[in-house]
Image (cartoon, rainbow, N blue to C red; front, side, top):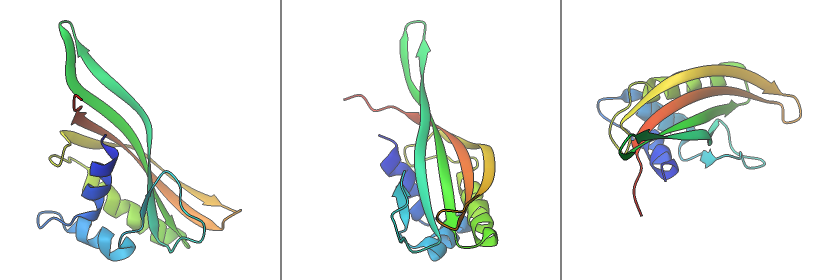
Length: 134
């Protein structure tokens, strides 16, 4: 399961990557899987696995999987959502280690949700990782 590793990666600072420290400074531990809780303190992040593919070789499985994740940056104003998304993008580009082989940014979008009056900036990532065998 790659989701716990993704959450840990986003929350653990790295001396080589100051964006991690900046993310944690803004959201502390407010990162949620799939659903932003009602009345959540903002800014916050949610992450959702959109899809997965699993490589296969002619002689069997390769043990490499690709997860497509949407990381949503939630805030009360559009600038805060955009700034957080820039930090997430920097953190996820060229990722290697911590159970990931490589990551890249696939797409980005911004949105406003009138029902909740929240701004959202989505960063779509493709993460290659070794699938653990039970």
